[in-house]
Amino acid sequence: MRELVVGVDLGGTKILAGIADSNGNILGKKRILTPVGADPDHVLDVIVDYITELLRVYQVQKEEIRGVAVATPGPLSFPEGVVRNSPNLGWQRVNLKQELIRRTGRPIIVEKDTNMAVLGEYYFGRQRGCGDLLYITVSTGVGGGVVCAGELYRGHAGGAGEIGHMVVEAGGVTCNCGRQGCLEALASGNAIARRLDEMVKQGQGQGILTCTTPGEHPGPRELGMAARQGDKEARLLLSQVTDYLGIGIANLVNIFNPQAIILGGGMMLGLKDLLLEPVQNYVYEHIFSLNRDNLVVECTSLGDDIVLYGCVAAVMRERV
Amino acid sequence: MRELVVGVDLGGTKILAGIADSNGNILGKKRILTPVGADPDHVLDVIVDYITELLRVYQVQKEEIRGVAVATPGPLSFPEGVVRNSPNLGWQRVNLKQELIRRTGRPIIVEKDTNMAVLGEYYFGRQRGCGDLLYITVSTGVGGGVVCAGELYRGHAGGAGEIGHMVVEAGGVTCNCGRQGCLEALASGNAIARRLDEMVKQGQGQGILTCTTPGEHPGPRELGMAARQGDKEARLLLSQVTDYLGIGIANLVNIFNPQAIILGGGMMLGLKDLLLEPVQNYVYEHIFSLNRDNLVVECTSLGDDIVLYGCVAAVMRERV
Image (spheres, rainbow over the protein chains, first blue to last red):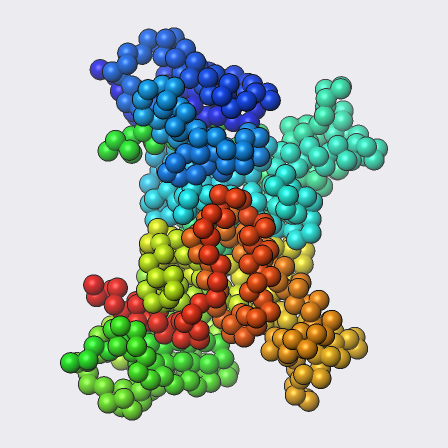
């Protein structure tokens, strides 16, 4: 009999669900857009329908399911599984775990998406088994997951790893969270989109605009295209973003002394050719020599599926 | 028979050594200045002589000694116990643990001073037993010790907790470590002394100078005296320092989601009446609501002896 895991990666803009076996082989996956502006109840219904649909399409028998895991943007309380004031979802307080269990009638593992991702890396990535591991996602926002001494670190109530809201430029740009100069406000997809909008309004960024579909706003992808064509404004903006990412990551290296920093997220993976090497160089130059020994800074090999891999890991480790 | 612990707190400016029983009762302690500009060998000799002297004065029998622990400024590699590029000691690479063992002919526990301090708090402070605990020292420099899920967290090689070298103001004041805008460069005793020197050169800070012994440079103590007398420049500078400390601590709360942040160090304890409440307010206002639940931010009750308490804890836990 197959042993299968159902994983759901709930995001602010999309929902990715997949079925995998216990070795992390993803048998199938589907992606839909998160219903915009929908109330949490509706989103939860969509998730449950979606799981049912996946089970039907892949002809999964109930007894083959070893577990179901759902990843969600934080903050998420642990162990209760309550989403609290989530900027990405726009939810104030949703008892995600309890509501999913009520709807499905079965145990569900609920975990913050970045925590799930670091579990994915720890069990299935190139850095598997690396006991002091930080995962950093650079996407619409910036977030993190932490493995300390071989254990997922959630902090006292589940709120650990909010590294996107580390202020690295006191008095800087205002962040969605209300603080100023957060890493996320300076070096995320949203930050780049906002900066590009400002530039365009001021008549700058023409090279970047030529890479942008007319009528649309430029973002990290268009910035990358322009930079690869040698556009100077694009390269300058990218180097600023790189420096901020370098500052944030070097801070975390000096705080955690990890063995490996694993980078992921849509923006990071999409601009890997432009971002990774300068970020690595910045970090290696700005940390204590002790913390530099054998430090790995690299992009995940698990790509966009890292959270799904984490769902498999979360189910398997709970059942060990 | 008594069970005694010898603890040594080696600092850049002073060495504090003490003898305590296994319950953390300090029987006696002595403080001397760290030999200025001395080579590491001489400092190690001084430490060993000092331990011998303490044992003589307090008439300690060899068999009464349950253990000896030495705390040192970081970075300190673990488990080797090698001091690496320590800005406070001015040492490049000193095999502290091995050298102390060689000189004394007995096992010695060597730990970074901030790690020792957080152990002291965890075993003997008001927050004893608090499994997710951060200790932050604000003194000549800024440093930290981390307890995660009930365990001292040293990171991969002993370098964790260098929170003073978290950049919170990109492009800001240059730090001793070479980076710009580190918390330590903005909110430590050294940072205040440097800022006051600048002010005095520009003809400012007259109110602070009236609190300063003629011929000496003003520092945190003189700043505090002037602020308590209502001096406006002193209050403004203190409020800037408070904001930087608040930013740094709020960052750490969002990263670690601790149960308690314990503050110590000469500057923090000396200016507690001026710093603690504004720092608490800043932190509570700038963290995620989930991370604010039940969070304690307070000064240690162990005062200047927190590292000695940590030495006792380090010996006792190793022998459990």
